Length: 251
Image 1 (cartoon, rainbow, N blue to C red):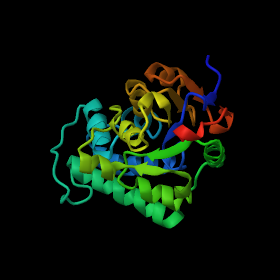
Image 2 (cartoon, rainbow, N blue to C red):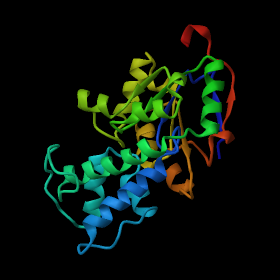
Image 3 (cartoon, rainbow, N blue to C red):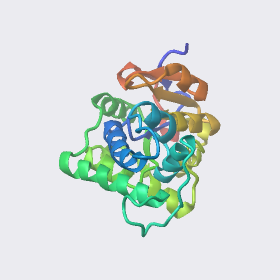
Image 4 (cartoon, one colour):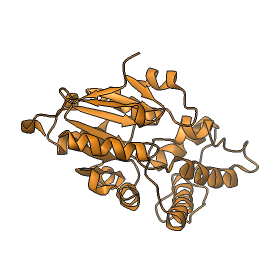
């Protein structure tokens, strides 16, 4: 097993997924999905499993992709619909709008917290000359990072709005992470990816990044994360050491 270290003599930037890595929002997402899916599944299938179904089919994917993947696993087909659908309508867009509505109501009511260990790691990386980016499939990625009070710790944010504008595919395609590296003027091999979801870890492996770190929170299977492409797996980023400094010419 590789030692949990980011070596800044070979890595110049670290690209962080947001949910479950920077912001403590994964439970809120899972609860919102369960609320919406259970209402839809009543009379059609068994309830949404807030752990297994969330991690396997939804976590880390763009919202609409998560709906398609989960419903396909249940053998259920619904129309795509459109962004003008009523939230909760039996369409891909209708379910997505309902989930977004429920989740953002939670954010507006309770706010968003950042993981203290991630904040500490971000400070250390930046003190050592590394650049940092927040990468999220969510259309609300920038809002969530801002709400958590950590926007100033990132050189840039690439989120679902960028994906929509640039027609970038969602994870497990590495396009979002590669776009962040491009904006930092770095090759993928010069950047590390940190993610907590299987699609994000897979994207890091496919993208040819210099290091892929997986955060296995809440009983996530370390073996699955390694199989997806993680070179280092930790249960919390406090376990991840940082060595060296980024030379000023590459920072």
